[in-house]
Length: 343
Image (cartoon, rainbow, N blue to C red; front, top):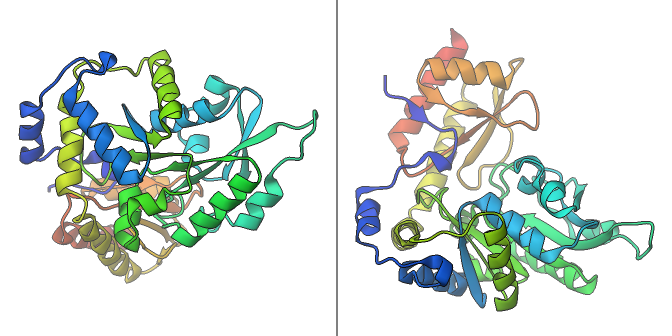
């Protein structure tokens, strides 16, 4: 039985075309700024997001932490949704690296309201931490791949500007958001002081994210990247994969979204199964009545379907579609799970 891997869109393997592009990449020493392929990728993403400059980094977590490190000082506070990636999945990096703390709010599927953010900004007082950054995530992982409407992003950016906050956009799946909404990435990132773009999720590259924004802030992020050991030498072999992904794997994200909806529809017909959220992109969150997510993930693994407990509740299971699973795969996965639950 061939396993069907729906744990995450991070499990994708580079295609033969991507591997060929990596093998042919022209390289240099990126610490000296001399890798032409890295430079080309950085310029490409800066233009894509409508920013002055961009920096190639090892991971989405590194991009998030560099952004927060640049925009804050020790003792500052970051306003974000309670399910935000930097709060839940980055090893406590905010206080450990920068001496800052989150002020978490409960958004609707991870999406915050402008009035909610405005009310959370601390008054100026020696007693309080300083509110310095508004962080948003598009799409929102724990929101089931929810897409921030561009009008909401603009309104949040206006609140941040008026209240003296920087806004950081965690664009882990920003291209999914763009394809699903039909809104250009630069429009989705327009209000953000800094914005990131991950290459190693739905875009299918093996590694890497980019952090984009004003030239001076990107220069400071580069300095912090060095501090964290993230400066790379002949990184053009990795950057080439990112360029290939941007050339070949963006429009096809719509297939992942369609496959996710097909999976959700098939699972909704299984007795006791409920899809937790509307499926907008490539993430499907489901519950099975009376059953825990950890146990279910183990049972599904036995029938060749790999998935993860979502983590925010003990009963939610997460499935993520990607370029290495087809429509036939997701329907086969749904059938295997239906049989496993009925057994």
